[in-house]
Image (cartoon, rainbow, N blue to C red):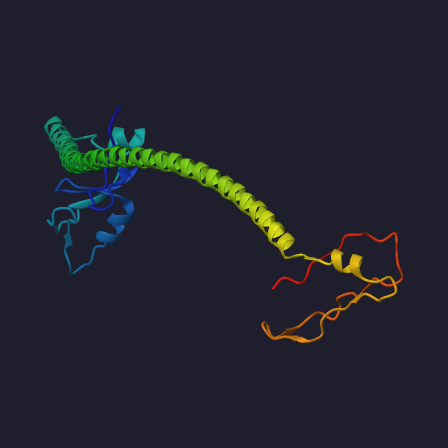
Length: 260
């Protein structure tokens, strides 16, 4: 498989397959850049955009057909002597060899540049890999430290939970004991109050039995001011009337005054 030439314009590099502008300095250019660079002026000479060589003669740059027809091939060298034909062929082969050599050098230059770039990227990648490994080791140590701290806090939490449950049981037990003691104290106080009130009752049974049948016996609440406590007895105290011999009434009466 034959290799096509490429445009020697620095930023073009387009493949040349049908037509091209060629120069005597062995450079080839595409139709677009050839027409732009090789507009011949009568007063100005042309310059090769690849090497800067001056192209003064009208045959120093021509537009060549890279795929000539069979008729052109049979007539282009017809009538020339063999040495001329060989000279033309050698120069054409030299032009082609130069293009191949330039393309080879260009590709080698691109390959070297790519290798250098790849080497630089590998170094950067190696540095980044070392950095990532160091960060990974640091993260692993942090994870281990955090895990240990978590286990420690978990044990402390379990211990505090156990202590809290123990304290709660003790508080509940003390609460039950306190309630029982309160009930016991209230029961004892009720008994003492009942005994004290029984001692303070006034027995008026003798007064009722010793009265004459016709004599009225009425017990009224005191209306005078109690000087010792500076108060008046309650006006709602009932009046006890023991007149008119009531045989069915109780023979024993206890009157319990208001406690001071």
